[in-house]
Image (cartoon, rainbow, N blue to C red):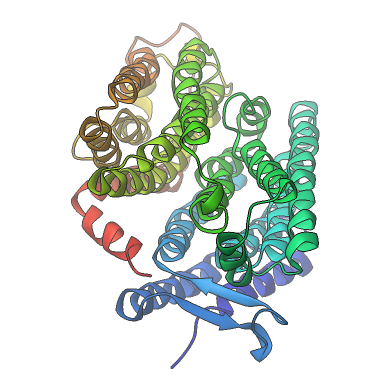
Length: 481
């Protein structure tokens, strides 16, 4: 039987090297063709997981503990599908975007393909040291993409991003060293039973705290979010879409994996409540700051800070003693992850088109945009429907599952936070829409843009909306393994 697992890492590395050799600004067609092949491989792998369950792959025939294992299950399958479904339209968008705005194209294509390879490897890694390596490669590629624009703002944001990501990686690596020194292994398959069967030492507890803190820095959960808005708001629109939709989800995936797998013996209700409290603060604080922004891309960036908070509400809800409530929380959290990735990629792509047309990233200059770029504004609105959690979007399914879990467990505080967060999301989305429907500002003329720029944003927003009708397939795959 053909095994797509190694090819999902090797192929994007090969495409990236070829794009690098092709020269500055080249490699878009190669990236598009490669992503079609990789999407097909991901679909094959998802079908195998659905039929056969979780799978291990021993690299070079040498499995753990001596060799390197790759591991895929339902959660991995969902993440791999999400990466490729989001990235393929963004590649089309990026080719059109950089033909209109050359700033930032540089080595965008090889860096994007290396970033894709690092994400694929990270999601399939089955030992904590290889996770560190892939996490570092992912972060460095992301920093390079932010700095590619070359102007002062993006470079300053990239330097801040670099310092934060190095701090997070260093904390994670110290945790890895403590675990290896205690148990003599870095394999998740080996470490899991050892932690469950032995008394937890201070070194292991410290390792867990260091690794969790490092990943929280990379996920930009409040109050560690300070680096995200400048990085996402100043980068070129295709880069912003990739970072917000996918890169920060990688570190959250690791938190989820380690929390309920490796560090399950350390999981306590107070720590889960703390993460939930930080998530609630992120929802409220990020939404308020998003509404206060005068720049469109900064509004969308602070919206990301807010939407990340919903992901962390699943931790206290999954600690509920009611199995149905805990299962609903996990399903809601994963639906929120998928729906937000699609919607935020669409929103950043739509924002990029509006900024290109207006010539400046200023919400006040969007007056009259509704008649000039109706499809782009419609895509922005559809993405907003998902972020608000309105039916029939995937965001509605996610928030419904999370609210149902909280109601079943009697956790009314989380219910209030989610409802208020939805109202605040509506406030900052309608702030943009209302401005766009106002009469044009005297003397402001919109530049024409290529129509191919508008369709990827609309497609991603439409998928996020229609996800509500197909959520059963996502949740079914999630249960594979």
